Length: 511
Image 1: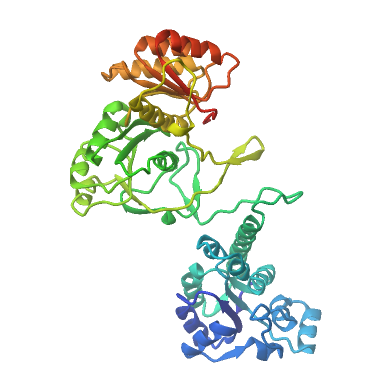
Image 2 (image 1 turned 60 degrees about the vertical axis):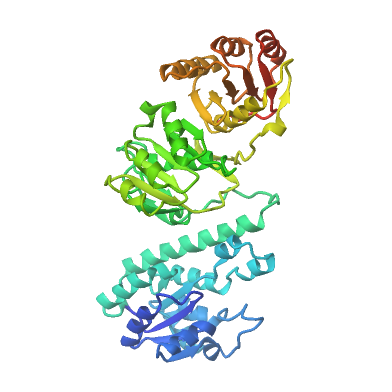
C-alpha cells in the first residue's frame, strides 16, 4: 500500500523560520514529535508536546552536541521496513518506535565559509547527524517522508493538509531525491573547502550548484536551458522580463569586463555576443555612456550595458533613447529608475558585490575541462619598452586601457583605443591580420581618426605585418605579450615607423 500516515516525526533544524505552520499541521494530526536542543525548545514554544531524543535513546547529548541522534533507536525507527516481518519483530523486540517523517535543515556550512570564519568555526558546521538522518530517511522512502530544506516546509504543509496527514509513494520518492541532492551538494562544498591547496590522489572533479532556474530556452529556441546558481546573490532584478540564456552569457562577460575598471572613474561598457562594442571612461557617467555608444551605435542596438557608478537622471535620459536588453549598475537614482522602467521588457539589474569562483569549467567532448580564472591584468608598471621610442604618459594610459578590453575579447583580437575610449576592435578572427583590418575598417566607418591611437593584441605578432598595417593607419603605440621567435622583426618595424612598443610577457587568449 503506497499511502502512509505520519504517526511520528523527528525534527532537528538549524533555522527555525517557516517551520511553525508545518508543526501546527503535525499537531492537528496527533503526530508524536521527537526533537533535540534548540528545535525542541522551539516546538514547545509553539505549544507542542515533544519527546527529547535523549529520552527515546536513554543516552544524553555528548561532546558539545556533536553526538545527539546517532543511535539505533533513532536510525532503527527510520530504517526498518514496515512490510518486512523480521524488521517489525526486531523493532518490537528492541523497543524501537517507527519514525515516519524526518525534517532536517543542515548546519550552514556554505554560509559559514562565505563569512570568512576561522577554520575551527567552519569545521563545526560540518553536519554529521543531520546528513545521516537525511540519507537514512531518503533510503527508506517507501515508508518515510524526508524534508531536507526549509524551502520545502510550505509545500509539505500543503501536502499533509490536502492528504489528511498521509503521503503517497510518489511524494516520498520526490522528496527522497531532493534529499540526496541536498547531501550531495553539501558534501561537494565540504570537499571543495578541505581540498584547497591540496592534491587529493585519485579524486574526480566535483561540482555542485543550486538552485536550478529553468530558462525560456537555451542558445536557440530548439535547445532547452537551465541556470544552476543563485542569481539573487549577485543581482536584484528591478525591472523587466526573465533573463535568457544569451542574456546570462552576455551579463557574465559584462561583469567580468567592468571588474577591470574599479579605479573610481565613471566607466561604461556595451557588449554584444560577449564582445565589447563600446567602452569608455569619462568625468561623468553620462559622458562615459555617450562615448561608449559612439564606438559602434549599430552593434549597441539590443546589447547589454554595464556601468560602475549609480545611474543618475542625466545618464538615464541618454540610455532611454536606445533599445537595449539589459542594464547593470551598482545603484539607480530615484529619479532615474522610472525613466528606465518605461520600457516593459527592459531588464534592470542592481549588482551586489560578490566573490567569483577561482576556477572555470566547461563541457568538452565527453568530459569537462577546468582552468584557473584569468585574474591577471597588466598595468603600466608591467610594461617593458622594447623600441627606441618610448610611449608618452597619455599613450601608456591608453595602452593599459586597451589591454583591459583586449583581455575580455574573443581571440584573435586587436583593440584600437585612445586614453579612456575604445575606438574599434577586431574580434574572433582566424588571423591577427584580419582582426586588425576589421578594427581599422570599423573605426573609420564610424568616423574615428586613428592618428595617435594605440593598439593592443591578445597574443604575439608572428610577423611584422600587423605593425606595418597599424603604422600606416596612424597607430603610434602597441602593447602585446611578445614571445614570438620573430619579435625582433616587429620591434624593428616599429622603430622604422617611429612607433613605440611595450611587451607584457602575458598572453590573454579567450576562446
